[in-house]
Length: 349
Image (cartoon, rainbow, N blue to C red; front, side):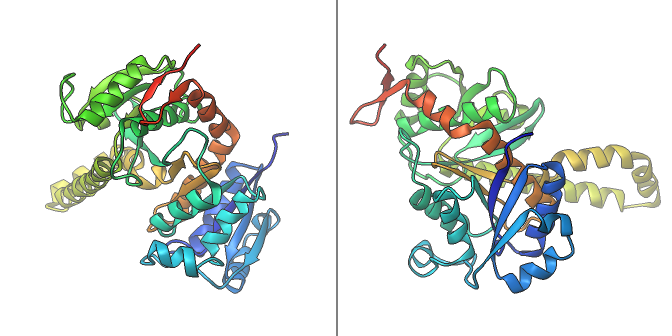
């Protein structure tokens, strides 16, 4: 029998909380019989929901708090005035070792700040990175950072590459993940000093990483590499552009099939193929951004997701716990020696 995995849930985070949190946990319970949950939030709202799912209630405990982090709360406000919020207590639960991971659909900046302070960073990691799984023509890839770090040094990008490679190998199941640095061109001389420095460091690191080199924006969807590494500024723009493009094409397809009687007939004939396309591109299937680099598992669900999307975020957290991502990241970082200038060098043997 597998060892149980305990996840702390911010039951009040997200547009449809706590309903979608409870329903999502119920789906995850069926998928992962070893999961146990600690729900933080308003018991008067959570309790009636749990009574509808008796099997879920048997693997849940509820920690009551009437405080919650609002979507527009400033980080300083959260840290000073929301210490008893459902999000704060869920993160604290992991920091104290009572749970192995935290999942929240609440305020992204607040969750990152609480995770950095409450869980600390892994040895050798200067800044945690937000990563997420992307659908590609070849399958799936992981991309980081998606907005946690706007300004990055070469050393930070190298750390992101290591964390992404470990994630792709252990969670995505890629035996030898390829790593690429997102750039304005694939030629060796392109880009600024930071990205060129990161490329040189990865080539000389001595780590068992298959470094592809530079990639461009269209390589993300093509699946040219398994791990896309970039700073949070470019990463967040790429993420939002991909989400907007998916919605754009979805709207075009719906409009096209409504134009005439013949197009409606065509829709009926094409419906099985369209369902496959919809399922493949459903953002709920890729919900759950990981905060890689913190000393614990922390997953951010999209605030507007429904219970199916939240269940997928729970899948991500459970997989990260089971695969022991953090010890493997530390092992890789021990091969690097970081000097006072924060530039990576090959570790002495």
